Length: 569
Image 1 (cartoon, helix red, strand yellow):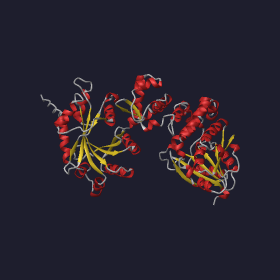
Image 2 (cartoon, helix red, strand yellow):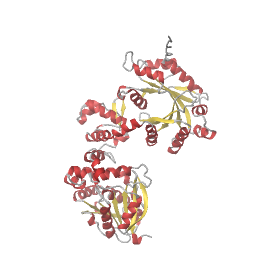
Image 3 (cartoon, helix red, strand yellow):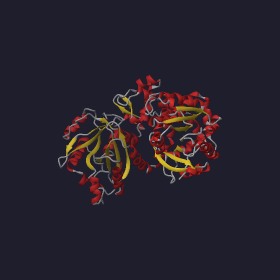
Image 4 (tube, helix red, strand yellow):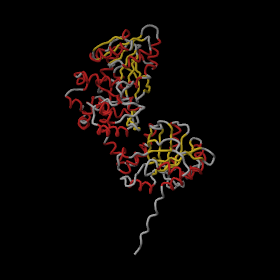
């Protein structure tokens, strides 16, 4: 009868760490990269070596108690020069791999220094998860020691630049390295890009890390998308829970939790619950979820706001709290009727509330104020607009010049233009309740004497202006109503007048764009739609106007410049 040979024992943490230390002392980027990426040619090797250096090798160990870590390090000739820090990325990976709540896994990181063959300093990156004898985490420790999931080699990019970073990732991919996740660690302000090494790699490590100082979550998003594309079930599950994210952000905003938190120092969940009037245990769960999204971060005291979460404060410049309340409130309710809109083309909001959103909000002063504040919340879109050549020329022209903001909301955009060009006057046309809000806002900004306020509809566009503005107006309406609005503007415009239109424009090649998401939102909730450039050009032509030029704005918006067709050169 054949006998079953026992598996060789897993090396101890001390032995594993000592082997890693010896490896780090002997290697450098020029010798390691050809082993990791067989087939790398001389030019590619030089491009990588010139832009990054071998930073560290890493492994995960499991001391029985926090104080045992120093003993293990000392046995390997290492000294911890700084206290351990939380490891957000490895904690999330462990939680995902073993089906645990990330909050149960206090993964820490320490980086003792060693000296390389050329005298340069590099580190051994030691992740630690304390596992006392008899702990329910013992099984995790045994599996992780045997499989070394977190063992990897790391190269640090010396001068982070988006173009260079993309090029480095492309070289790795060209030679068989595959995107394997990553993350941003706010505790040390660094972004990690993980790769699986090619199957024919000879370096003895299955994983490779590019460590980039600073916050590079924009590039990380594309890297993670590539990783998730190979895990369709996980990707679909994340997409299906998107509604939970909307509500989590809306509730966080509704509780004004961001206003009770700080970006520098954490606050305990129980203390925060008392401040905002919430159940401590459930609030803790909400905060953990928001930590996964990067809205809050954890520290030794509890939870603190990130720069992202600070945008949900009520008093912060550019606050997006009104948008969170709007998208998590009435628009969230009506979006549940998207199926009706897709089947019939009818507006789900109108079906749910019995009237269009303009009339519905106008009947409720609180909703009306929320809507106006939510429109102002995207004000970053307007930042470059006052410098548009049309406005700059009007502001520098002799004699008084007037800007007419049609349906200008609470005057946010008009106020920016008047601040940038003291020689301009303004006219704001809006619904009666919005006119009063604009009057207060522009008066407080010191522009009251330079503004005239008109309560009315699109048919009341005043004549005699020099520049007319339609900011995020046309996407609210179908084509027939857009033609009507544009004709009202054309009739009011003198021959020399210019028209600036701010919208999100659908890309002609159907590439990914915020405009595509807003197109679905407008059809479901408002009855309008987003459009391509050629579509806007046709609408303008139908109204006797001609499209002159396009210009990019923040938040994937566009400014379209038009004038009367018979005056267009």
